[in-house]
Length: 110
Image 1 (cartoon, helix red, strand yellow):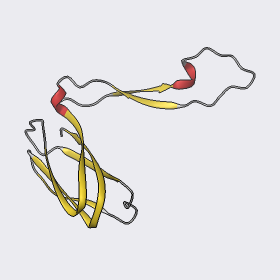
Image 2 (tube, rainbow, N blue to C red):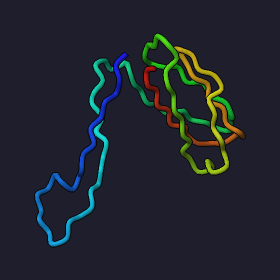
Image 3 (spheres, rainbow, N blue to C red):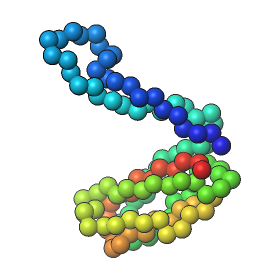
């Protein structure tokens, strides 16, 4: 599998301005493209008064991929999200209580 590589760039160096005081660097990570488009994917899951949802991957993975999740929504403040199961075809996300909102998922091939 291909690995993600990145470059660290300073956004304040792109514009050639020579002020009296030098601005501190603003670093941004710029990721390179992966060789095949199936190594990485991102998606959203909608929770509507539920505490468990399943997401089926669109890409094909030979082993269980690395998955990160985060909640976005109005009543997301007191909800803890966990991945209850993961396979090569799907991931099951469980919440500590029922809530309405969205969960962002990032999947990267292991």
